[in-house]
Image 1 (cartoon, helix red, strand yellow):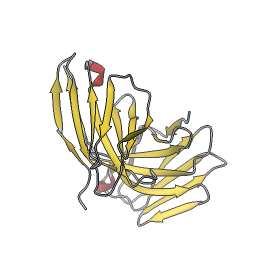
Image 2: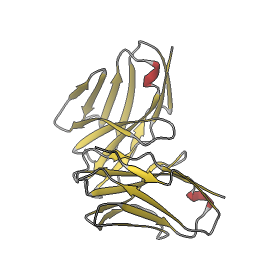
Image 3: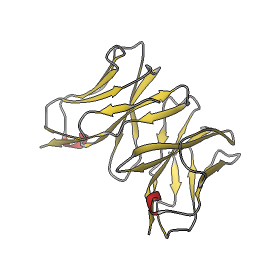
Image 4: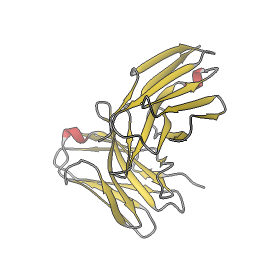
Length: 112
Length: 112
C-alpha cells in the first residue's frame, strides 16, 4: 500500500516568509495529489489538486509542485501570514484500493 | 450550497456501548466517505458509500459499520465501544470521482 511522509510534524516561520512543506510517497505514482488545510477541531478543507502530468499549480499565494521522479510534492505559501497557521495534509488516491490516503500532516505556525 | 453536516458534534460514551453518527452530504453528492482521526494514527479511511452501496472499506474491525440512505445521508455505527475508539470522526462527500472531498466538521467521540 501507499506510504506518505510529510516533513516534520511542526514548522515555524516568520510572517512574510515563504513556507515550504514536503510530501513524499513510496510505491506507485498516483494519478493526482491533493493538499488540504485543517484547523483545530474542524474538518480538512481542500486547497489544491495537481495531476501527474502537471509540474506546478498555483492559486493565489499557494503553489504546489509534483515531481513523479522524486515521488515528491512541495507545497509553498508565499508572503505567509499568521492566519495561515494550521495543519496541512497531503493526500493521494490509491487506485487499487479506490481510496484517498492522507499523510500525517505538518503543523505550520506563522509567527508575527 | 450548504456544506456537509454531521451530528452530533460531541459525544461521550462508556466502554461497551454503541454509537451512531450521522452525516448529510452536500446536495447532489452521492459519495460519502468516513474517516477516523486520532493524534497517533492521523486520518484513516473507514469506508465509502455510493448510491446506498458500500463501495470501499478500510482496515477496521467489523464493529465499525455504516449505511447510506436513498437521499445520500449516511450513518456510521460503532458497537461495543473501546477506549481506543475515542477520536474525531469525519465524513466527506464528493461528486463521485474523489477528486475533491468536502469534509464536515466532525463528531468528537470520547469513550470512558
